[in-house]
Amino acid sequence: MGDAFQQVSDSMGELIESFFTTPIFGDATVGFTITTFYFLLACLIMLAVFFAYKRKMEGTLVPHGFFANGVEYLIDFVANDVCKGALGDTWKQHFPFLATVFFVVMFGDYIGMLPTWKAGTGTTGVTGAIALMSFCYFIMVGMKKKGVFGYIKSLAPSGLPAPIALIVWVIELFSTFLRLITLAVRLFCNMFAGHVVMGVFAIMATTFVQPMIAQFSAAALGTGAMSILWMALLILIYLVELLVAFIQAYIFTLLSAVYVQLAEAEGH
Image (cartoon, rainbow, N blue to C red; front, side, top):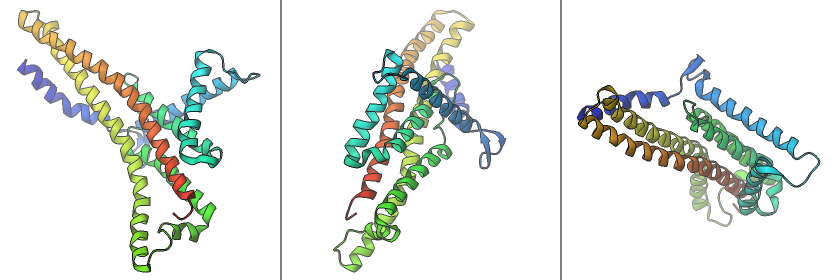
């Protein structure tokens, strides 16, 4: 069993390295990476799903079948639980953008749950790009509603003494730009950590069963039995990660909606 644990330790470096993006051409800074490929693939799958949904809904207002009802449920979920709850009367104006963000993140998360495939949201380059779109959107919403100077001025609440207002304004300016970083890093870290944990248990499940395959014995049987535990934990974690992938899309979209609401709010 000690040899098995040593093999797990030796495999950890390869596991962590496998999660870092590799370029297909160019380099990881300027080029087309494997993560970008899977993100674009996720977007294409998303478009295919919605084109299929549109065809299913032609000539009817009521969805029929598991597929159409499932897509309809997700659309209603974004509309009712995210947009209406966070934005109130202006939710229809922002629904197209927020629904796009939700589904792009969700499909980007779930594509990485398929064996040997990479998560489209598995690098800060991708999550940073999505976060930048959200950041630019709520900034433009604030400037459109209040004007450029009015939005910049609104970062500090009105009615404060000038010295305090300046301090608050600087803090709020920093906080506004920090939203960009937190959106990107939160999504990346949650997906990265979950995949690493699943990778560790997958390594342990295969490593502990190898001695029994190589040479059957009572000791090897005992070691191999440990693989059943690791495999059961792997399946459990996989099911949890399926839920986490959805929750991360929800949180990312909800935070984006909250930032839009703050940009629209009077006196903020």
